[in-house]
Image (cartoon, rainbow, N blue to C red; front, side):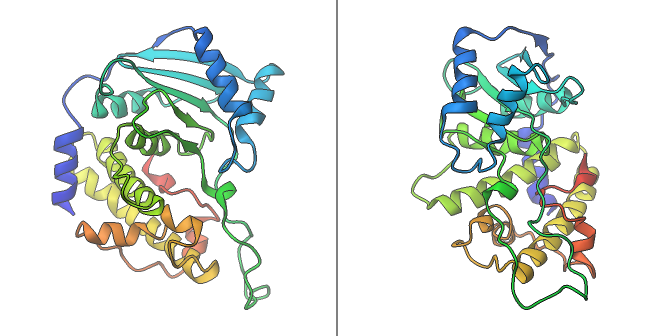
Length: 283
């Protein structure tokens, strides 16, 4: 594990000072883009219309549009007045990635909807366990962003939760890291696996010891989540939509020489019904 983390930190995390964020104003094109992505674009994965709900909140005056620019990135955030925006971590992420290829900026539209990722049913107890699954995990339970390949201006995030991880995931897509000859499920599982490793490395601030500690926490989270998804929801193959973001990570990590620990004795309880991909104890 140390070899993988060392390599990532050496390639991604530099001694460069993260750029400072300054207030900016959206251009007319930015405003059209926000409206398009919030209301007009297909919501194949945003089944709950979280983006549209945040546009409605903005128009009602309950949410605000905050525009910030730093170095080679621009963030257009539709947030509530008390939403905590992790500018320092954003800066570290963009510093690690560097500027997009060619001219232009990374442009991020963030609809910071408070809806969290959760399993579609409550805890099972001895009194309500049955042999039938009562629900399935679908995009509405897990998805929170998208971007177009090789298009740094197209990143959209539509949950407040795990914005740092989703940002890295979508930056990888927008940075042309996908092998388009691979099927979509494989592209997604590889992107998600690398996004989580990258975030651990970035949060470790150059300390391999801290990176190992953080990864130990994250590896247990992945193992517990995999156990619940496979045993309770039948997420066993790439044909099951959540596999590409969750269960598939185990095989991707194994190909990197990283083995997950066994699930804990009470994996569902330890997850607290959360379907977030990264352990909340990392941030």
